[in-house]
Image 1 (cartoon, rainbow, N blue to C red):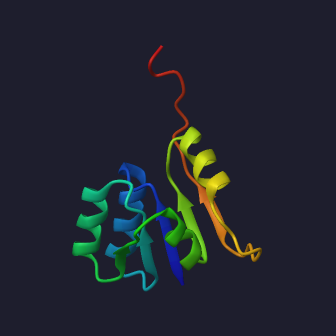
Image 2 (image 1 turned 30 degrees about the vertical axis):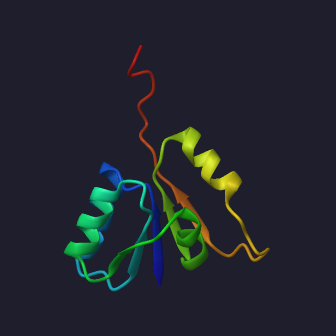
Length: 102
């Protein structure tokens, strides 16, 4: 199975590392949102590659983990192009902490 990850921040990076360290056989396709972390993961694990853009992740994966700020998630999902076949499962992860800047 191809698993896409849009947003390679701390949570998503650790998820990918955990899967790969425990010998998960699935292929991971990462968005280039954090180029340094995406490149690091692709260099470290043979089953990880970096896509050209978010659309490529959405087009080529059966499951997509969306790990971005809420306002970015809405932007990514509303601008995504689909051919009408919506068979990709999207899993959104986010922190449960609000109001840290108050």
